[in-house]
Length: 349
Image 1: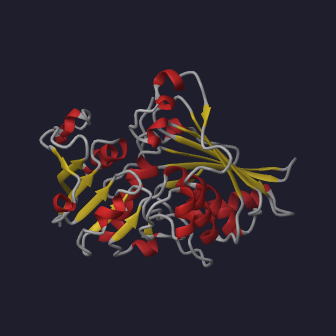
Image 2 (image 1 turned 90 degrees about the vertical axis):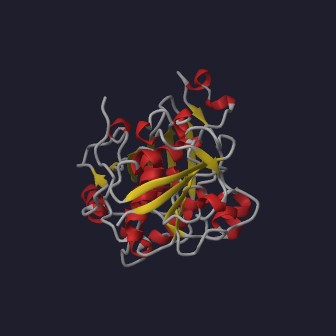
C-alpha cells in the first residue's frame, strides 16, 4: 500500500531532510509541500539538492492544503503546528517535528515557550525506555495517529542517560550535559549568531544557565526512564559543522559500580536496536560517523578517579535527531517495518 504524504515547512532544513528521506521511501508518495513566505516558489528554489522532487511547487501551509493525505509531517516553528493540527482529520497520521506537542506539563510549556499549550502527543523516540519494566516508546507508537517528533538535543541526552537510570547505576541528582551542536538545528533563521563569519573558527555557547527549551523535555524523558526528580545542568554550544550533535553527559556513579557493569547496562538496553549502537569499551564516537544516517553511536565509561559515569553520544541532528525519528515513528504507527526507507550508513569523508 502506498501512503500519500504532505510536508509543511518544506523549505526549511527539517522539511528538506524529511523530503530527502521520503523521496526514497518505498511506501510513501510525496504529493504536497507547503511553506509560508516561500509559497508559490518551486521547491528546488529552496531545496536545490532534491532533484527528484523538482516537479513540486510550494503551496500555503493551510489545513485545507494538508488535508486529504494519509500522512502529514509538520516542520513548523513552535506555536504554529498546534493550530493547524487541530484542523486536520482525526484519522490522518500527523507527525509534528516542532515543539508544540512534546511537553506533557502545561507549566513547563509556559515557562520555556509561552503561549497556548496544545497538549502532548505520543513521543517519537522508539528506543527510549518509558516504563519501569523496560518497555520502550515504540509500544505506544503502534497505530498512533498523533506523534511528536523529539527535540534533537533532547533525544541525544535522553538516549544517552536512560539506560543508567533504568539500571540504577547513576545518581539522578547531579547530571551534567555539554553538547557541541551544528547550527542547522536552529533552522534557517537569519540571525547574526548563525552567520558563517560568527561561527567559523569559534565555539559559541548559548542558552546558558538552564534556559534551553529542551531541558523540560529531557527531564520528562528521564523521569519515565526511572528518575524521580532529575537535576540537569545542560549547556549547548554552536560549533563550525553544518550538522551533527556530540553530547557528553556525566553523572555520579552509585557506590560499588564497576566499569563492566556500566558497559553491560547500556549494551543490555540497546542490544537489539537497529539504529542505536553502543561502542566497545574504550571507544567513543565522532559526529562524522553518523552524518546522513539514522544512526546513534555512543560510548560509555566509568571515571573511577571521581566516581562519575561518562557517556559520549553522536547523532546527525537533522536525520536521526528530527526527520529520521519522525519517519521511523511513522513506519511503526502504520505497521511498516521500522527500518523502511532509513539508512544506518553515514557519508564520509
